[in-house]
Length: 146
Image 1 (spheres, helix red, strand yellow):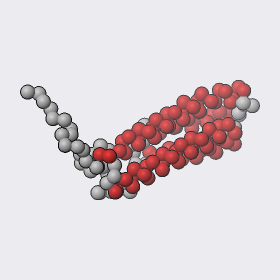
Image 2 (cartoon, helix red, strand yellow):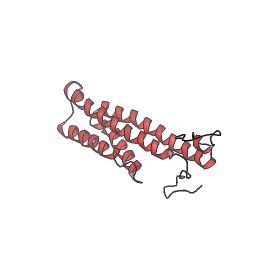
Image 3 (cartoon, rainbow, N blue to C red):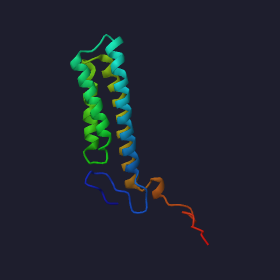
Image 4 (cartoon, rainbow, N blue to C red):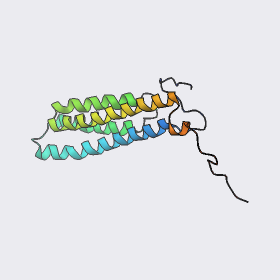
């Protein structure tokens, strides 16, 4: 099975691309992070002891960058951008502890996504993905337009 330049195996012809689904999960996670942090900022600003104006701007800019990063997940560098932004959100603990804790929770989610990515790559190399195992006779159903 050929490997792409990213060190990940490519789906053979006739098999659905599992990387497309995983990229969708990563993009969706970034959008959820954007929503979560943007909704949390006013609450922290008002009730959580407050954050400085600079801290508010930092978290807001990082959140918007996460939304933008959701749209570049198909690029080879998209995952790296997402992980750098995730690390920056964890460091926002110094802006306000609750923001850093939310960043750490999402970092755990990203850790699981990376685990899944490695598992899919391993299964592809071994030919153990569902689509690589073959289909029962008669699949896909014949088009009966007589």
